[in-house]
Image 1: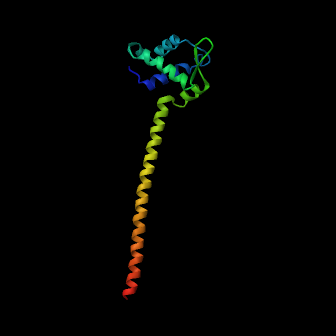
Image 2: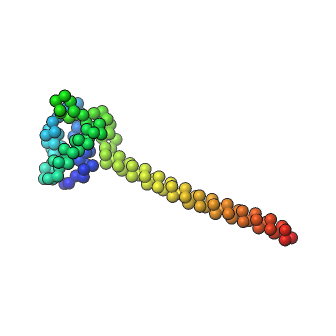
Length: 137
């Protein structure tokens, strides 16, 4: 099984998001071993180790994990909330849906504007026709 980089971020947060891991701090090796136990197929993925190290740095930069005085990593409250709300993958899906809704609404607005313009021109033409016909009779 090969995880995408986004899925790697989520798997690390999921590993932290259990009863005893959410309040403790761990070395990078402990975290890697724990994630591999959570997703055993990762052991055969040669890209997992470097990706995981980069993922840990990103999670720390994003404020979802933090280092203690000994340099060990632990999950922050923001990290717990983020993974509970769907993590990186879930938020990407939510953003995609929001973009699709916005795109649809913009298209409907353009179509509605064109129809309103055409209706205005038609109404103006009918009124102009009435005025011109009144002069003829």
